[in-house]
Each structure stands twice: as C-alpha cells, then as structure tokens.
Length: 127
Image 1 (cartoon, rainbow, N blue to C red):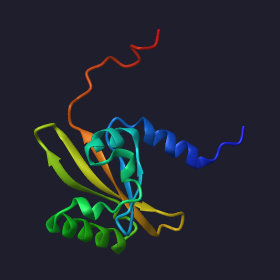
Image 2: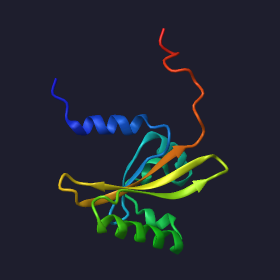
Image 3: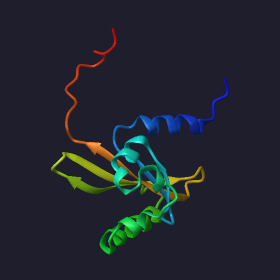
C-alpha cells in the first residue's frame, strides 16, 4: 500500500471535533474540515472554500490577523497564538502558522480547543 503523507493529514483534520479553517496568505479559505462546514453552514458551508476570509471580518479583526501574520513571519518558531477565549463555551481559539517544508509561511489556520475536561474512562468503548 502506497499512501501519500497528505492523506494522513487530511484524515486527521477531518476527525477533529472542532472547526478547522485553513487560509493562504491572501486570506483565501483553502480548507474546511467537516466540523467547520457544519459550524459555518449559515455562511455557505463548503461553498466558503475559495472565498476570502476578510469578507467576514471587521477592520479590527483584520488588523489583528494581519499583526499575527507579521509575527509568524518574524521567526519560524512563532507558530501558535491564543486569539480568542470564549468563556461562555469554555473553549479557546488559537491562530496557527502553516509552513512549507522549508519553514516558509504559506498560510494560517484556526485551532479550537475545549477547556472542558473529558470525564470518560479511557478505552471504555472497546469491548
């Protein structure tokens, strides 16, 4: 079996429970995982791919994203930054750098993380 490494990354992204939106440096949405398609259904869902994220942002938000992109460009070690703390739903949203194999910035994505502790017992679904 000869599987391309990109298949692994897409498969992983599609299992994420939280929305994952990837954009190029021109703010063009290049990928939405299924959770993002569902979460942003009222904005067009999968039809958002290819559209500019900047259409959905006010000037303040765009300015903040611009600053983060510049921060990502300053240093290859600058790869993730807390963007939003949503205390109503106990989740945080991070803005993360996307880099090519040479470490050059090629885009950015959002990463949602829940602060709610998972209370399930490990491996309980395996019989």
